[in-house]
Amino acid sequence: MSPADDHPVNPESHAGETDSSNGQWKPHRVRAGSHNWEGDTPPSDPGVHRKHVEPWLAALLQAEHVSLLVGSGLTTAIAELAVAPVVEMKTSRFDCDLADAVDRTAAESAKRCGRGEPNLEDQLRAARELITGLRILSATGGGDEFAARATVLLAAWEKALDERLRALLLAVLATERGIGAATGPAGPDANWIRRLLGSFLLTFASRAVSRERLHIFTTNYDRVVEYGCDLLGLRVLDRFVGRLKPVFRASRLGIDLHYNPPGIRGEPRYLEGVVRLTKLHGSIDWRQEERASGAPRILRSALPLGAEESHPGLPPHPRDGLIVYPNPAKDVETLEYPYAELFRDFAAAACQPNAVLVTYGYGFGDDHINRVVRDMLTIPSTHLAILSYDRAAGRIARFCAETGRDEQITLLVGDHFGDLATLVENYLPKPAIDRTTWRMVELMNRRTPHGGGEKAGRPDDTSPGDPE
Image 1 (spheres, rainbow, N blue to C red):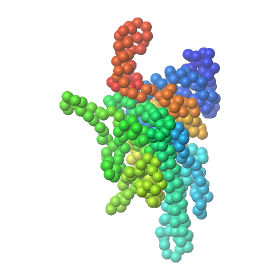
Image 2: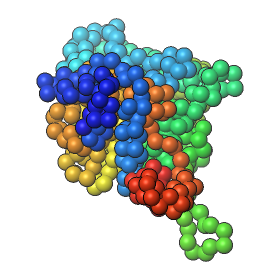
Image 3: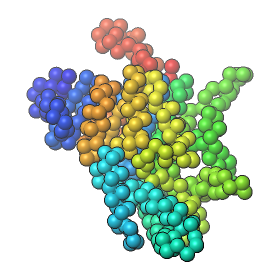
Image 4: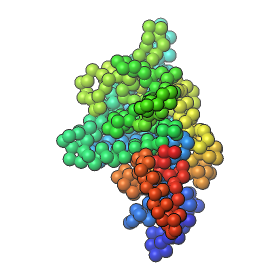
């Protein structure tokens, strides 16, 4: 079904008739249930699609299990609105011997993952592998010329890796600093930017407390999601326990928050405004610290949003203490601590019946994540909603073609549908749990027993915000 069914005179409505049978998607594409459309130019009237997309998304978000996967697109959208610098993840050549070998390895890794061009994470992963090999060779000691050469190279590459990771850390902090300044008291568009970020997150977090909490997953190193949760007053469950030195725990994930209504004994209720957060690739405020036994533990440092370069919370040697995840190309790398627990959380949340996964700003360039999503779609009752500013160099179309589960995939692709302001203002459901609205509908239905009232009826459990 295309918009032409309801708008026969609208020329845009006929663009959806040419489905991507040849594997090439047009720049703008919508698929929401039976509503399909694609075109070379953005739609001139969002209302044509809104009446189909908004209720469809509202129904999806009331599934039994809902997860939100956020990629770099969210940070980029907020940074551009705030006129803040955007972190570049492009590769840049290391000024060391064997740099060509590292670049070749990074390119091969990106090709195997179907990503195309390598990014900074591919390069960092290859550099780490080289450093591991050099460390083994240099440990042979003695008068071996080969070992001596490895020792020299090891020192040079460790220094280069430190510099590259520190540059990444400072770039992320600069983005955070720009966003913080734009949303502060002096920001000219502070209220608007805060409202967009808050409305986006609250759309997914506004779930009836009788349903499972929203689980937010992100591949970003920055703290934009946490910042948005702070603005909204959401309570975040993220595996870290403690106040002075929050420690990453594997056994505390199931702890939830309850309250006792006044005058009621022994019947605790779930607290509203609670979400779970998992940062799949680590964070700039995560640090690795070795205990006396030699076993590592992960701490969250007290690093302010957009901290300055001189802040004492920045690690002196990022390669040893900073927990950011080079893009993995081998399954064995996902077994390293703490990533095994993080990926296990993602698989457990997504791969279960009646689960909905919504992605925003994720370009499907991480095969270890794509593999979990593909496995999720093998369960017939699951659903994937892809919200993207662009076609991600063809990776989204390729992923959809490989899975072959079009009936389980919702699409909002293009710089119109993926624009954060347009998405929040036109297509995302109302971010509220509103009992008053449903009571008003019931009252109107009783007052108008004939005509439109009977058709409206009481919203079922797929209606947005229905707390029952």
